[in-house]
Length: 317
Ligand SMILES: Nc1nc2c(ncn2[C@@H]2O[C@H](COP(=O)(O)OP(=O)(O)O)[C@@H](O)[C@H]2O)c(=O)[nH]1
Ligand SMILES: [Mg+2]
Picture 1: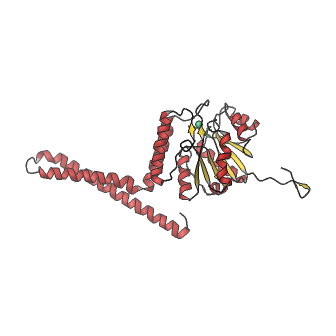
Picture 2: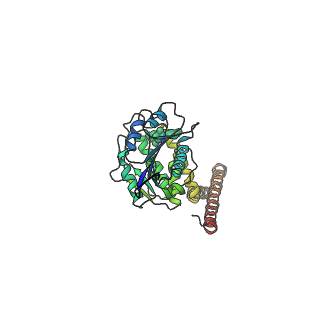
Picture 3: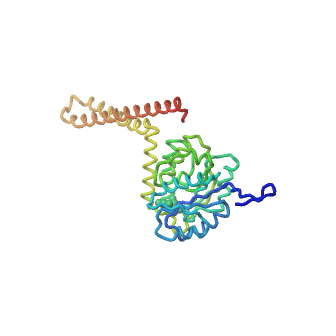
């Protein structure tokens, strides 16, 4: 954009301060309004269209967004990867992600990015469950799903985040460059938070209201959505705390087996035949318990060893 500098008109490109990134998949009913409203608060809007079969891309462009097209559907995670790459390439200082279906209110953007401008945080999450945050008529099963997923993920990382499933997020340049994620689907929402936590990025939650009174609030069925993310949360938990996930049930099994064996031994002299079956059961439960505990221990020490090695050799943590 031409600006006047030192009395001379120069062609100096104004650095982009805030870019909004919107994953978009068949959202023609809402995308136009959302792009128009978002452009009031940011310098540029990029939409990543993942092979929508409707007019989303055309409408977004005509309302002033840059549309980045994937020829094949690469999922929500794939769209976010493209958005991060585009924002870095455009030299944006701040990237704010929000949905194209109208669930996130563009007027919340200034609150979302303020902590980044004030250098109070590297990653800001718009939360439905903190302060004045909320939602309009969120289906009960969704609410329950979010609570379970949030509890499972806080167990593995103790991040203390109230809304791990919010897609309304804002990132500083540092966060954009540091965060790495591999997931293609919605489980990316968790992976990214865990990565931010491990890299000691400063995370802040800001209350927002998420709307459920929009034409199409979700592309996913609650069951597939919930289970994919929950499976991811549990897998991470078993990778991060193998001793807890394997060792604890192992100890439980071993204790059960020991209790059964003791009971059997006390009746041994009376009914030898009757105790062979339960005796064998108690033995295999005991072996399973021991095996689980041993695996938990080995994985935990392998994990600790690798972490120490990374910190010592490469200064990573
Ligand atoms: N690019 C892209 N965007 C997607 C895809 N799936 C969902 N989205 C967009 O991501 C945002 C969130 O998706 P949505 O289905 O509303 O998820 P939910 O509200 O969390 O259940 C919306 O703006 C969708 O248009 C996808 O496969 N690719
Ligand atoms: Mg939605």
